Image 1 (tube, rainbow, N blue to C red):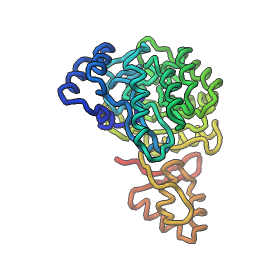
Image 2: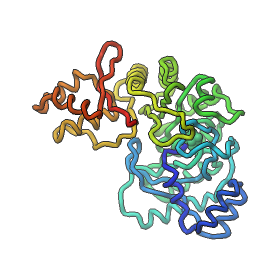
Image 3: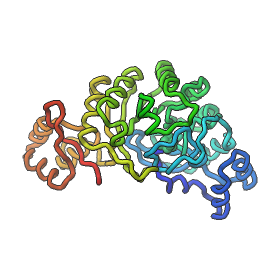
Image 4: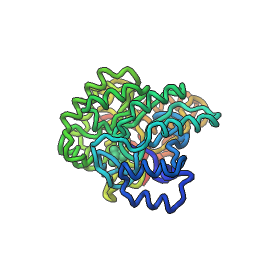
Length: 358
Ligand code: SF4
C-alpha cells in the first residue's frame, strides 16, 4: 500500500552493491532468500527512509517492511507497477528486530521534527505477520506517533485487526464497495471476498481508538460514476473516518490506460462524501502540495492552496477575496486563463476546483 515513488523505495537499499540488488530482485523475494541475504550481509538493508512530506501525515519517516510488489491487490493505478507477488499469506519477510533497530539507529542521529513514523512499504504492510510486534517495539524506541497505510484487504482477519490497534493512525484504502468495480480497479487476490473485507473494516472502525482516515482513488470510467461514488459515500458513513481523502492517480500507473477522474467527478465525490460524513470531513489529494492556506498574503496562492483540498463555491470565493480588499473577478479570471483552476457546475451551483495536470 504505497504512496512512495519506486525511486525512493529503491533508495532504502543502502550498503547494498548493485549485483546484490539485481540478484535479490531476480530471486523473486522468497522469504528464505531475503532473510538469508540480510543475515549473510549483516547490516545490509535499511528499512527506514525519509522523512518525506505528506499532505495527510505532515512530515513522515517511512518504514518499508515488505519486499517490492508483494501485495494482496494489483491495483490498475499502482505507481509501483503490476504486483509480482500476489499473496494473502501473512509471513515473516524480514527479521522484525532488524526493522526496529534500523529505526532506532535512524532516530539516534535525527535532529529534526517529524509528525509520524509510518509503515508505507512497496506492498501491503499487514502481510508482515510481525507488524503488531514491530509496532509495539517501536513504541518503546520513540514517542513519535505511529501510522500505517493499508489497502484494508486483510482486515477480515482478526489478527490483522488486533495488530493495527497498536497504531496511532490507520489509513484505509476504500476504492469500491461493489464486487465488479472492486475487481476491476484493485484486481484482488482470488481468495479475497469483498463482503468479508467490508465487514472487517466496519468491525475495526468500531473498536479502533486512534485516528482513522480513508483514501479513495478515483479512476476515470472505473469508480467515478455517480452510483459508485454514492455507494462508497454510504459505506464511509458506517466507518466514520476523521477524514476521508479523495485522490486521483498522479504518477505513472501500472496500466497505461488509467486516467484520473476529471474535475467534475472530484467535485461530485467531494460533495457526496460530505453529505454523508459532514462538513470538513473530506479532502482532495490531487497531487498539488501548495502552501498552507492562510489569510493575508497573496490571495491567488491562498485560493489555489485551499482549492487543492476542497472545491469552493464561486460565490464564497468571491466573498473571501473581497474581504482581502482585492478584486475576485480579476484574480479568479487570471487563474482560469492560466489553466490553474476551472469552474464546475454541480446541483445548480458553480464551484471552483483546481485543474488537474494533463
Ligand atoms: S497494488 Fe494497490 S494496494 Fe498494492 S501497493 Fe499498489 S496501490 Fe497499494
